[in-house]
Length: 182
Image (cartoon, rainbow, N blue to C red; front, side, top):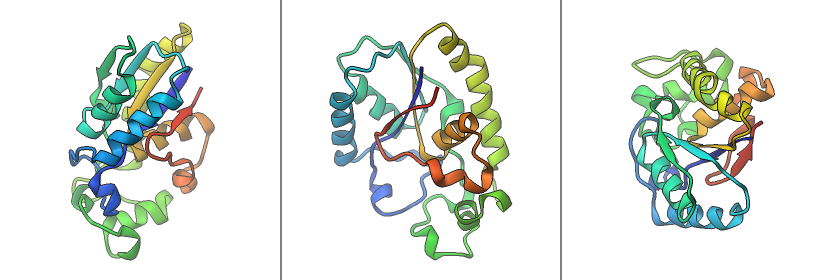
């Protein structure tokens, strides 16, 4: 099986600020969410956990896996989508002039600018990780957990569920929600 989990909450989540590649830590609520998720999903067997290099995902995985004999491996291909100059912007849905506004409201026509990552780039790097790492392990019968981020996890879910880009955000996971993908 392949499972995904989005990191716990951060101060920027609470402020409705885009995080992207900005390395924001969990807040205490996020840590508690990870502890609660560990209790809720304790009976799901896991063989290995792959995690984003960003501290909010790493800390979520560490708390979630505490007391389990599950190796945790950091992979840069699991980092959050880069939002370029929109990182740190708050209340994006109220700012139609912000470049990332279109990414959320009209993803099929979003054009990455100013160092932001495109959906194509996101799908390419996550797809490479899945083909090279996760899928071979799942084919061996392993239970694989990926702890990552909103857009990154959504790209993986949509790949397996054949969700078109215009409906990209419909499968966005909640913080510390465990989703079985395959």
